[in-house]
Image (cartoon, rainbow, N blue to C red; front, side, top):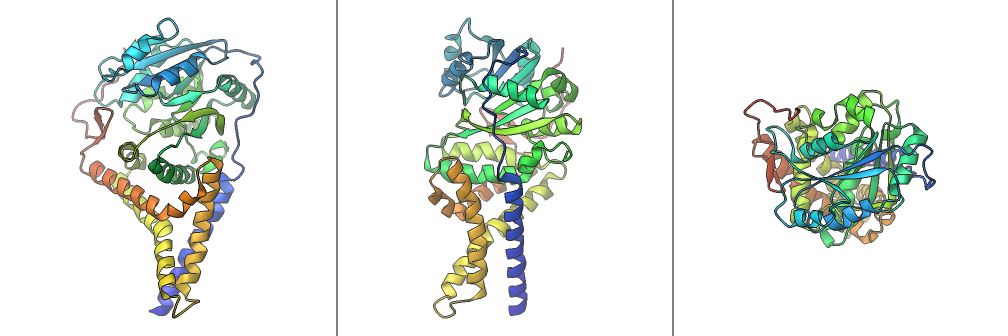
Length: 393
């Protein structure tokens, strides 16, 4: 029995070591948005499409930053999803500076954000389409730099990873590990490798498309029933052999996704099960098992090793536990430092992962039972009982 346990601990330590190597390959030296603020040689018209719903706390700062962009050829199209919290009154204060679109009734089978983006697209006149979120804040030169990047790289979709605005304990505890897991799930900087079509991601907080590429993949109509529409659009771009580029842009874009534990829970709950694709129940359970085995169990091993240490100082639990915990902590400490979060939060990694597992279990149960996921006054993920409406005239 002792030999079996020793073997399992060594196998687990090897897996954690390989994970650390994979993490190094895909995340270290992640490309950043070049600081090219020269006026683009070809100032293509950019249609900025902003879907909003009940975002009175953030929409004013977001719209103000979009209006203030120094890029000359732009239009700002805001699609309001029947907000009830004062968002509409705030948007009306920008009359004459934005094109305000009132969302039409949501067709069956459409996710609200996707429907709003589709309606904004139908109003757009630009050769380039920028989709962004109502909780984002843009620097004056962000669009100029991104258009330059799109043209210089001949990309069909440029998507930005923003600076994460994290203020509360729960944001600082949970958001960095979740970002870390997402980037490992999608392949990190391999997203930018045209020879690796499997690795793809779009960040819905900032997606700048060439219009012809957006049309070629079918736009938001093609992903109308997808809660994780940005991930799906990124995969469609690479599936069509189009060029996807993702870069960090901490000096150009800031986003505060959620501001409390309940918001974090509901926000990620709608994504965990939905991103599983085919065989979602199996894949969701599989991810939960991996999370526990690779990111929680090593710390249990370490704790047991410390418990045994007074009578057995160099026990295998302590040795393998320290080895695994050190690699896991190191990766998150590097990430926390890069996004200006106190690295001490990284020491709570096992607790953060257990909370995220709780979110994942909630998501999996609700998804498997067809209960759906509530978000901004709507429920997604329930079985569709009638024909999928297209919403296309």
